[in-house]
Length: 191
Image (cartoon, rainbow, N blue to C red; front, side, top):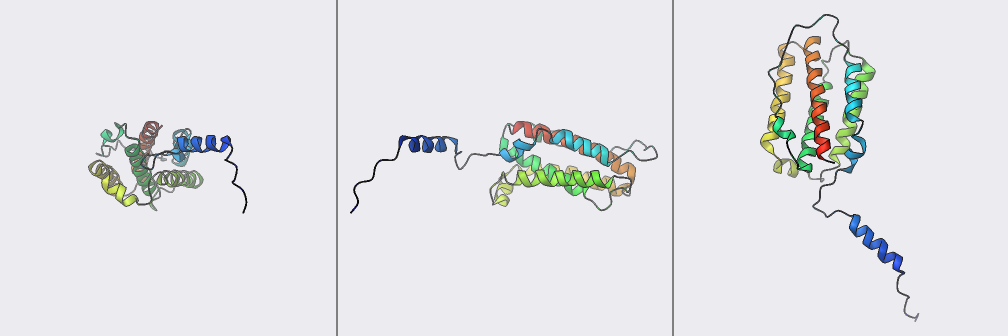
């Protein structure tokens, strides 16, 4: 029978202690995947949006969608709520901008790049939430997210009422520009 084994070297205890200090508690919210990539997200998105959708050939009449964004969603110190709101906005932007009725004068490459960037950030932000995201969605600020649904529903209604004209899409691009700025504000809350 072999003799008693030697105690582990002190370095192992130091490594274990460091690991315990760096591991967040199970109930902590950590969203580092988005934080690593969000510094250039606003600038890149706005640049792609500008490149994707040049102004229509004919000047557009003043059209204003009667859509108001629920700005109360931006006034939060809760990182999990900010991340969930940013995810909801990104998903709606992706759905709106990937519509098959986008104008023919949009540049395909920039449009494709913007959709890829949105999908990339959606994927990384979804990783911030537990696997049972439906449970989280039910517990979240339901009325506030219903307001986002209503806001994007209003945008869809505006497009339909203007028969998806290039001018209506030009207005939607202005709304998308504002949404990217809101997402940037929310990601700053998550830092």
